[in-house]
Figure 1 (cartoon, rainbow, N blue to C red):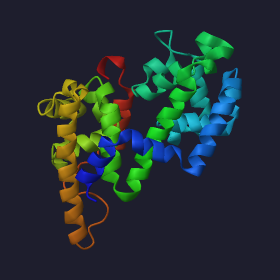
Figure 2 (figure 1 turned 30 degrees about the horizontal axis):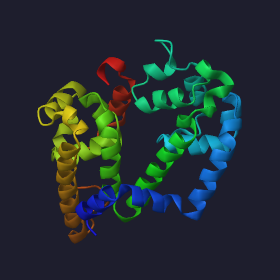
Figure 3 (figure 1 turned 90 degrees about the vertical axis):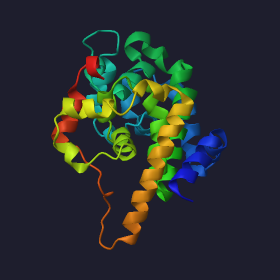
Length: 258
């Protein structure tokens, strides 16, 4: 199964695919534990100290790699989202705001975990992330396409796309951006991407599907070229990789540019 057919098959049967993931014993076990115990959590400290619940929630929001940063996440939760200067609102990555909004102990206190968004809503997110991870085992391109399908409609600017490595990889592949583009400064690169795509169209299912078919075709072509070339390594030919300093700058951009 190639990238194009793999993505289309999962996307066309999304609910069936999610049900298959949910039925896996290890997933069913973690889901059952989460639903049985999250409602008993009454404070930020209780939440963070329960590794099993906390790690489940972090993965659901795509923050698995930040699960070790408990002091950071405590600050995200402790400042909530109601104040204009709250920590979560100052971060470019919207996942932190979504996390703080879902587990809003500041606003709702001990009842924060009684809402659907903190219970089944979080489970639904977890299953989608698991589906994407499972797809990556066979083809990383399928995972990227599914992730883009889920997240791109929520992004408000080109800078938002650039600040997320996975979203940016889809964009750079679909647009066939040359490696030399990595030398451009942030604003020039954003202008280049903005001249080629209209991110507002990602809210339209048909337009998004067309863009992802374009990505999948180019990803598959690059993968095939890699497979036929000796000693090619893991990097896709012709794809740029933004320097860490650039990614950090994008992540530090305030809400006005994200």
